Length: 175
Figure 1 (spheres, rainbow, N blue to C red):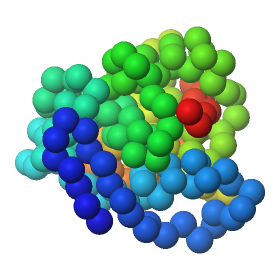
Figure 2 (figure 1 turned 120 degrees about the vertical axis):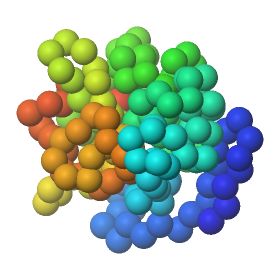
Figure 3 (figure 1 turned 45 degrees about the horizontal axis):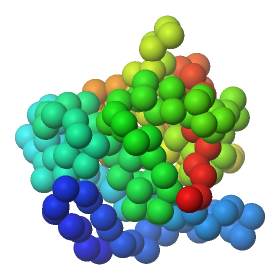
Figure 4 (figure 1 turned 180 degrees about the vertical axis):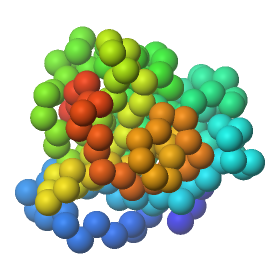
């Protein structure tokens, strides 16, 4: 795997996802494999919202270093997969939701590679990438806790989607 440490983070990977088959569009497969490659990424030190890779993700979306970084991670995964991301404030969950609604990419149901947006009341507070639809709906989430639901954790982790907290999903589009 290779990492570029400039203003954007890019990576090539062969992360395994044996459940993906030909029915899943190629761009969605790239998103999933890219997100899976980051599982285990940790803040250094824990609780700082920082590491060399996390800092690169935050810089790429114009967010201050040390900010919550779940949306910046999703932006990196989508961008590295060749999928468009919000042109402004891609480091903010609310900006992803507003962009999806404006571009008709907002969905009530998940698809592989879609971004899952979680909310607290009417506010988008956390997000990840849907990597598997069944038998359990799974996501890869950055800035999350290692167990349970958390919006300001220390890692990229594979999680069961917290369905009771989902606001909706952002459908990835190519080009």
